[in-house]
Length: 292
Image (cartoon, rainbow, N blue to C red):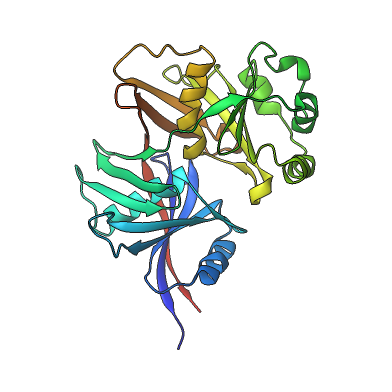
């Protein structure tokens, strides 16, 4: 007998259709890992999120898994924001409520407050990257002189590599050689994804603008990446661009403009609690069914 599952396509980190980052979301109890991967491949989005009810309600409200078209990943910010919107649209999450997701990255505290969805994300240790920088810059196919040689490359323990570039214009004109980036990632195993950021922004109220490349995971360029924008705040603190001298640090980061999918990510850090959150809006653009 054929299975039928309800699935939404939701644009995250935006309140406008066809902007932000699209994710598939479904709540279904009887899918195997192989079926999840096939559905994610069929959706052909950066990530598809799979929700199931938790069998440990004292620990979490739902289990949450994320798949790219090729692999399962440990953390995905935009698909989590999309999952919160899915729950809200299906009357499973109300304004002012919180929810806990059991994930490969541990228990994530999330919720819906003041018209925005939020999620607590892990804090990663970081270090200055000491590998071959020139080969990476050449693979990014930009003007090497436009990369900020006074600011170190920062590598997170999850292997996200952060590189600062001087201007928004140059960032927009980058044309990476994705095959070379994939080969560098696969052969050296020093980093998994690259975030290139600048402190020049499109909107006055924003603090930084970035692009994110992840060909190793089957995503040449991700439109708006929550799991990258959150730690970007820690990177900016580490590199001295933000002073860690307040009870609450809150900024807006930009991504996706070069792809025509403008997204805005709220990032908040509480130094006294050592807690990091990302937040954003979302909009449903498609509702349908898989029958298989």
